[in-house]
Length: 478
Image 1 (cartoon, rainbow, N blue to C red):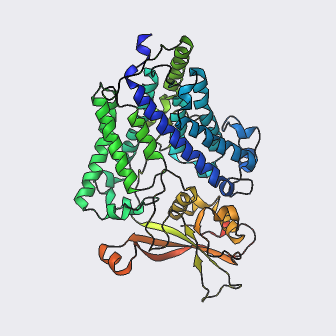
Image 2: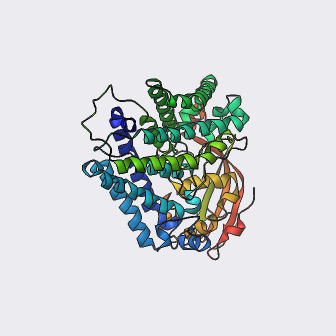
């Protein structure tokens, strides 16, 4: 069928596939380096416990067959190895059916990880990677031109990512409608980057212009993805620029980079490079692609209905395989930044003069003199959840107690998630957590004090606790 393929999009597919492979590598590397403390057999939210309270139908995956920390590590590092092979273009040297199987492997492996990731894997970009990775299985390789249907489905994913984020803003916090949200967002976002302080101090009229431009890019431009070229390419280019702006202003794991990859798949690169000689698509491949397209269209009903609903859900999966999902971001904006600061002491008895030493986190604000670092697309899961904990202790109730208990034991795997352990020789005798309000310093304060942040004590988050049973019950409600 002549309509089935689009020869001019061979470079679009190639760029998209290599970018997706890099993101897969980042995701698997994140899992391999962090899982033992978070969800391992002795982790804060152990996988075996989750498997006991869930079933195949709600969370299918490889770990239903067997779980051990060694097996999880094998899955994660295997995913890293396959991702490297895909980055190197091994799929282009294989027959079509073998290339499809190679692309299916990281999807199956990462789906299995997400299914047992519990709270730590509840972010929208997990579902976005799985949905995108599933479609990538059917994009083909150098043997055939890219199938038109898959290219359109990738645009459908991009449309839902951008428009979902735009609609949740317009329906949510009124500061988006007043164009004032960026007065606060650069300061209160989950994990600021090294340039966030500077973005925050941009003139307020420019902040308003940023919000207005964001509305245009997320509410109007996505529709243009479905128009003829070169309009669709221009729309995708605007999305890329917007996402790069977000990359510079904060740390959002691989969300921005995966959105950029999706946008680049919609660009017509035919003016840049002539397509190589490609054979026609085999009949079995056409049948498979058409069947998958029909499946995705059926599963799209609920996400599409969610887009037009006044009760729009943000970052929600509608099927256990995360094949078609709802997306969105920052429907509401915090006006004040609260941070949970975790401290310990080695004194045997806590008294008013006790000296407390602060644990340092890799990404989240802590030491006011430390400029935030750039970590994205790598995902610091504990740091992100600490931001949610500051919003409400309810977010932290399942895991914060186990986290503190592991600090009281100087647990090696937990301490590897942190930047600084103030008790390298022996575990602390007590650990506490306190809530501070953080705000960016002004230019004058920065020059005078060398501090990027100013912080003031707000309340206790968790009173001092010694080693023993999980102290989760001691966290205070907001």
